[in-house]
Length: 499
Image 1: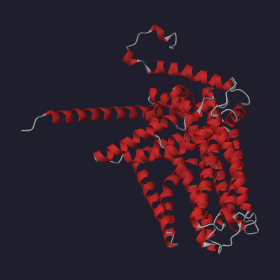
Image 2: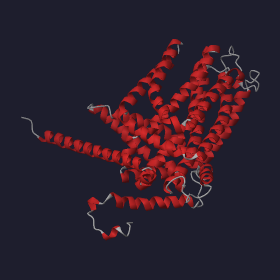
Image 3: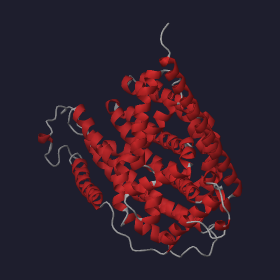
Image 4: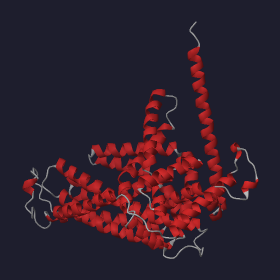
């Protein structure tokens, strides 16, 4: 489909202008905008995963209440210790002994998340730079404190984390200026949507309520008479549940913010009178009804695959000429890239706009990036990793606050309380960070659909993105030619018979 005015000109198939491509993508993106604006009836997607998540919430909620009540004000109140084969009867802890430590974690995590949202407009760029540069130091300090407190396993874990963080930052140091530019523009977008910020605060409050219930059950586990191994396994199950629940809430907010940002870019700005009324409520309704099953499904796998992809990309760029290691890493890289086609954060923008299933949305988003070349820009950007660093830093601060208090009162429970409190902090801070990440993903989707949407919103940013995309495509082309030439030379050398 080509504009009628451009049909009067004849172009060579290898030299189609970018303007004509933009016209095609502009019509496609306008169709998407009309689809979101007209509020069509949507089908329920991924209902199976919606049912699984809701059953999980009911079962986990009941279990948390039972675990917390069993040690609340009285040991073995519900007479379930006989089923746990307790071997630590000398430990007479109560739920209320440890619940205040988790209350501190919930308070600190909420305060950090709310502070980040509050400072989003004026100091967000500075805060993200601090997250990148301070995280390594903080991990190293925590590892030293763990060694000093004779927690050698955790000392090794945090020391390894500090080393990996340092190596990752070194490997992507040249990408940080462009990454910070993209994050700055994303902050500019979400700061112009105060109603979205209010929804983010509401989601944080909902998450805080669930975290308080979760911490009640976790405190009961820590205070139980079970042996240490059983306690850790039960806390691991509870942590996976909390991670999934937090990811679902984060991605539901992701869909809401993405829908609003996409709508604003389609209509040329927040002040446009063509934006349909009650757009936020429509996005909210879709996120918690017809698209909620897709959100539950994607939340299980997306975060883990993204983290694995970042690490493999960082290692792959620093291997050098070690062919054996490069072959192994390339195999993992292509395996993860295949998974990314089906599980990527850009699917949530497609879910917000079209209401498709998660896998279909993920494939469509990735095919759009590859067909337009924007995938090279997405791969170069590491804004998701930078935001993750902020989440990790928030979780570490939260875990440290609770862990220090626990160490003062019960040194044998520091690891359990500190690690689970860290997870609570990460979930609460992550809800604040996802607002910016949603804007970033929407900007890339809109740029792939129609670059003129970004140009109309911010022409200077459009020029910077276009220049960077041109550089990345040139770099990939030169690298492909180099590999091809080297393969030809290797084949020629093998064909030469020995003397």
